[in-house]
Length: 186
Image (cartoon, rainbow, N blue to C red; front, top):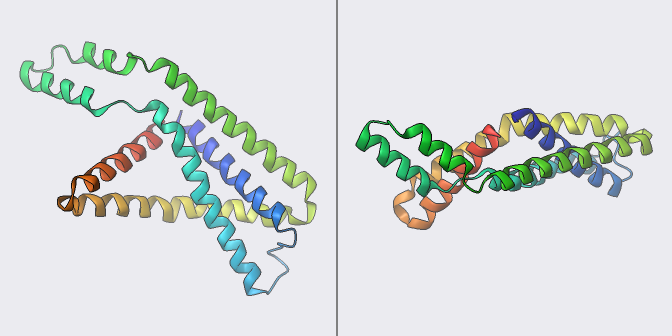
């Protein structure tokens, strides 16, 4: 399923980049020396990464399991040594989650098909921007792997570092950590 999540994220990058490049018909990276056009190229890559990650994180809620159920499992492990762990784990993961899991997979497939449709349609329609679009897609993927993942970890770490300031900070730290784990496991 991790490959499906990566394909959905890649498709969303391509979808948002095709929207940005359709709106800016004069964007051509290889022949320009204009700093404003280079800046807009970088801005398009950054915005495609941010919007793509937000959209791909939304179906992660379809695979989310309430933490209170796992606390009960943890208490069972501590008290009886884990004899009933497998049965309880199956009950936790299956209880009312099959519909949401299927919905999450369907949403990811829709993201993949929609992103590939718009990306290939853009490349077929805007011939002179094809190389710029391809470079932007490569830059966005690199930005996501090399910068965004580390920034995500830093934000989560900072939220847990200052968790004594309030309960809301603990809530957001736990929420972001759960989303990150679900995104990487799905």
